[in-house]
Amino acid sequence: MNLLNDEKTPKALGKREIVWIGIGNLFLMILSFSIGFWMGEEEPAGVDSDSSETSKVPSFAPPVPSVEEDSAVTSYSFYKTLEQKRESVSPLETGKPAMDSMAQDLLFTVQVGAYQDQRAAENLKSSLKSKGYSVYTEEGSFSGGSKIYRVRVGKYKEREKAQMLAIQLEKEERLATFVTLVNP
Image: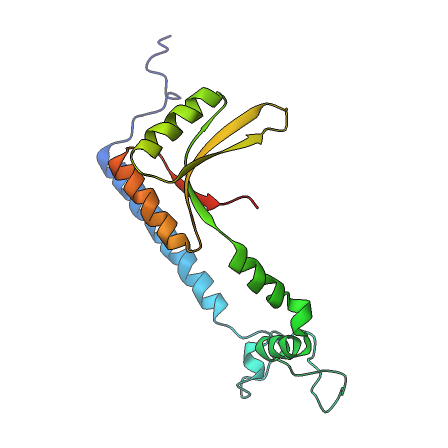
């Protein structure tokens, strides 16, 4: 008995068979898509095709009460509601006067370094001060209690001026900078 020539062993597919299988799969996909598209075009049962408004609403949707049926239903749009709320809020509730006075007190500065070693911060400060910059250090602390010494340059009322100084310091002094608020 020869096991290699057994009729039950699978035979390799030729190029023709593979092409026909691909064509058959493509046909089935197109047929499935067409049937799904055709079935999606049908109107739901119980909907009158003559009415243009109701043809878009499925039959299982709950009825929407009209204003005449229910006087409690208001017909505000989002923007009307928003405008009504805006008009009902007093200036004291918005905090605008507080924000205006706070905005006048804000000052911006450029931070050029932060060190745990105070000497390193003082060295950078003296180097920039000798070049004519208005430099100061600010001491802070981490939550663990260790101290940090920030080296900052200038104090400006306008953020744009502080950003211009930051760009200048990056170009001329090759320092990594960022604009931040001066601590009150």
